[in-house]
Image (cartoon, rainbow, N blue to C red):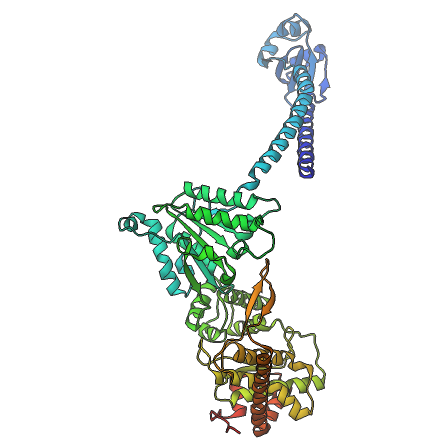
Length: 618
């Protein structure tokens, strides 16, 4: 009601302003028509004619408009029921002189009728406009109530709608996923070729992967390649306050899609409505469950020759209802992995299109420094590099902007306003030098790329390590080396200063997490190849309510002992390296105090050749 009143008031105000503009315009026209001019008598007019001062006479009703040769204007009143020619002769004008001037006759315009009509019509039009606005708003409110259960899907590729504008060429990497999805494109273009062989295209395709890996982009690329209508909607858009709206929107969405075959329905964030049923919350009449049931029913209703493909994406496939994942519904699952080094370079090439780059920019190096980055992260990286170049008033983006953008994305912006005290600077330098030295002299640790004690985000300093070769599988020795590197800063503080600081909090948290995973998940402890993770219970919103342990308290004690032993072993390894390489450690720390940042080449000059021999076991 508030919205209707607001729109009505706006319409009335618009009409009043329009009416005011019409009245002002009419006033200007009327003022021009009835402009005050000099009045002269017929006697003076006759004298002016005899003296050849008159150029033209225009007769309009009883008015005589006189135009003199000096371009002045006057008006006179003629005698009623007497011709103008005779009247001027009677007042003494010579007949020959009258014939020499031009005499024009025009019909008199009566504005009184127009004024009367406006006085009557304008109020009637105003009232008609008010009632029309009231009925229109009331009708709009009723239509909104009827449209409440309509699906609010965005349509691409349909006649009159925008195109997807994305093809497989715009998606870098993910070659295996593209091959899987090309079958869908071929089916939508040539369905008869598949139907002749009795082949049935998958009804539903589930795209899964980490956030930012390009699930939505890939779905739009399918629509762009197939050039068919593409209905895009988010899972959360089905659910409203009122019961039954979600299932109604599902019915409306699939009904519209059946009219536009062949087409694609894309449901983003499927886990918003596709979570497992029977969680004990909301009962059997839970709105989300009703919406899910309707989706299941609609997908079952597809005939074999139906040319509708349902795409969905989620980064939580583990919480989806099993009925969604069975054959006949979402029976094809495509995993979109994080890009490898080669794919990251391809992604960067796409995201730097339209961005002027300096000749020395090496995207290969940028790709090497960004392991674990998703496509969205790389897009953000390229944008941050462009912003940094603009801040420096540069016309092109250089390599330095890309490298700085990597650190900004990983750790946050530089805190230039944060001035470290000499003690903090020394402590931070030795802490980061400890990480770097331990990493450099462990055979299974990653090489150091950069060390800095410049504060970024929440970090007072940081050491960036980049793996020489990317691998999805890690061995126990690599985990143990990583734990030792994480504890390198903690151990250095203990050896150099005799006590530790709060700067090692994040390192201890990560080291403990790795040690816990070694024991409970990866079976790499003396307890043997047993998974102690336990089964997690989920509530409606997907948060873990608690973890039900599948082991006894005695086993829990053994797990704690194994975790502690891994941490103790890592501390001993770090201590052994730091004591052995103390001179190098001090040199690295002193250089850091002086320069605040060390790149790889300068750091490797300080430490010399890296020792790859494993330390002797005690």
